[in-house]
Length: 471
Image (spheres, rainbow, N blue to C red):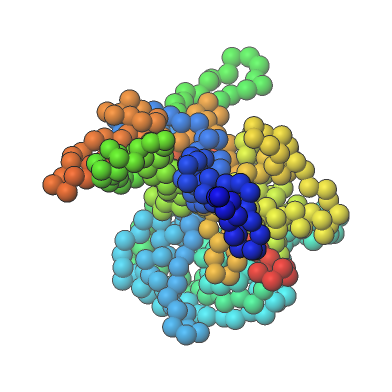
């Protein structure tokens, strides 16, 4: 007689085959390998891609007489600040000036000044006699409106300056006020001190005169050489001749590259290729990582990335730190001609929605392929995890116009590559080494170009909420 009783863990007899034993004969359903680092990569899909057949793209523009509107860096030792002489060439008056000795004399004559929040550095109507460089902090340039209200002209932050136009003009007066909204450190240089150095330096005098001549040429509001056109006339007036001048040294964007070598053992492909193709999955995950790096470079690369390629005149600051509806309106004003989309870190989008809620404004949402996202004034705000967040929990928000036809931002790539796997990306067999490892070279070519400065705007120093949830 056969004893059919089998003792289980609970001591009771088991009447059928256990699931543990049955699983020995079953086939497990498997997923393909998952990768947490994959993001939506909206930017790669939103940019219009232009072929750069020769490996480079040249942006030809009209001749521009803008002499300099950059920012300055400083050398600090503890609380002591020194102006770096070479940085003074960011000032319009000293643009491309190469006399290191004269620049050193000017840099050494700046005086340091500390300002408290609410302190007025200059008041409208006071004599304009100093150049100010903002080392650290935030300043508001103010002017009285038509009806007596105080209006904010602009917000200045680290590296900005004002008053450079008063160095050569005696007897002028400020037509605006400047107030510190935070604690600030500024460097100042008086007009009389600059004039003293100017009198002692023939090279500096010649350079200043040359810059005056260039600045005196006819320009349109964008700094481009003016086209002489006569309109609204009657009779037989003499028509002026004209031509459109071009930049003599246009910028060229060379395609950047991202490469890696994928290694797969022949034994893995031979023995463990069912039911999931091992090479296919290795390629898929590696290419995902390459595309993530590509988007990161398009945002952060110091040569062509969006954050570093924006014109300084297109960079603005928030009024108080967090991104408010007013700040977003100002951002849209930088790209007022047909803005395409806004790009921001998800935490910046959350901070903006918090400010909308705080001010009683209903945040907008719009339908896009793939779901619904936040928007402002009908312009979609796409999340981008590649936007950096500083140690002080600040970030930037971008707005751009895209496409060659609209003189916007374009992506650059070259297709038709040897062993092309995806547009602009190739997977090329290299070798099988003596360890039976197959090597594949994965290469991606890309870059980005801003055709005209007003195609890209940046809202900088956007303050995010603290990690504990407090603003």
